[in-house]
Length: 593
Image 1 (tube, one colour):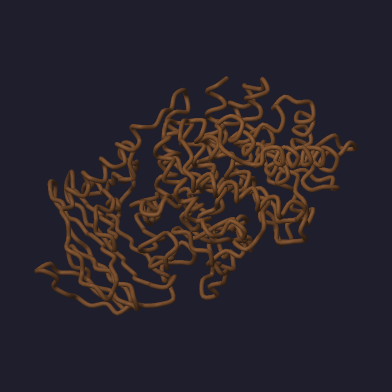
Image 2 (cartoon, rainbow, N blue to C red):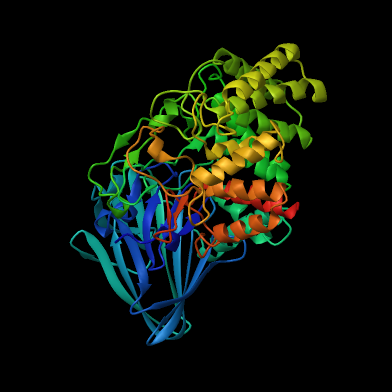
């Protein structure tokens, strides 16, 4: 394998987009100005020729690297044969310049003499375009300016020299000396933004993250993991729109060398709903309103043709296409932009949203006429599609079916609607919803349970199981220790837990998903199993599995979608909101036991 292991990347975030910085000091992934914008550094999905910014001490050895306190300011200590340096990297939180995004890399020599080496390769449009680059003076500040189409990048700081289609150079620092490079994005048709003080931006950024984290209520042995996971969710959230991306990347493979590569830089209703639940559980009731507001804006005017995902601002059209010029991470092709699953019907989504909004009501947040009205419209949508086969939570690209998990989530949708009327006094056709809820329960028990295997099944009439069945107790459909649930757990353990103790979503060999290849164990599913164990007096097993899962995280506490025990590497898009949401639930369940 030749690609940098995913777990060696740190995430920098400004609340609008994110950069991935390797332990070697190379920024290999960066989209400006939003997570779903075109990348200008795309070495992550190929090599350095597709764009990167390497900045590191010559002959340097990385001694330590950590986020400063509860922030995304990255401090790295390097030792060389002649000295020692500290490199601080961060993306300033936007403080009012609505069309500006910055990335700052500051170097301080703390001992001896150190040479700092650069290899800067601008490649816009996901590595396909080499921009026009020239040196300019902007308000008496020298800058390296790169322009292609609507995008402009200006790099302020000590000069870098051209070499072919890249820029490089060596800058020597002595003990006590510091220097800084600031990369600024702006629209190419506007004036170059004015530089702000690095010290002020660093202070504001540190205060922003630390102040946000100070409101988190987390206790017990996994408190630090909960805090970092909630921070990751915040970092993946667009601070302007409230939309949360599923991950910061596209096309990191579910199988190295395989074709299961998807674009996760969009906002799933499911992820937003689960984020609301996690925030409410940890004292962020008011903060959760930003996610609720995004949900309500996204589905407004769309309740009868509900999408499972939207763009960060609520955009509906996310056409999927392939970038054939990119070889892909670990030669995993194709690289995809957009997501064809956006047009799928997934019957669980309304239930996920209704459950989350019920949590907000329970936390004392009152419904507005608009918010409750849209929830009633969503329940109409669920009723209109009551008997419609679908793609399921895992976005199968095969024949449509009725997935047991989705039918339970539909049950939960009507159940929470009933609760809103009976427990909180809102108006709605409660008797009709009760009838639909009972129809679903009777149907699930008749068609979603298989007596032969003594388990709930992935789809009606099948003998396959699915890790999503672990969510049945999450929504109160049955208790964690219900005999049918315990029997289902036994079947899941037999069919989906691998020899390393990690859980797969389902058996890909069954052909249910309509895709070629295989995938590695899915982290959120294994976190769900931790929760199930914790809730059924298998606490020792739960803690052992939890510790094993935390051992798969990056040194900075970041999780991808999957983990390959064979390769001992993270796999799939990164960092992944779903995995961190699973960590939070699992940690909470252990704290409660």
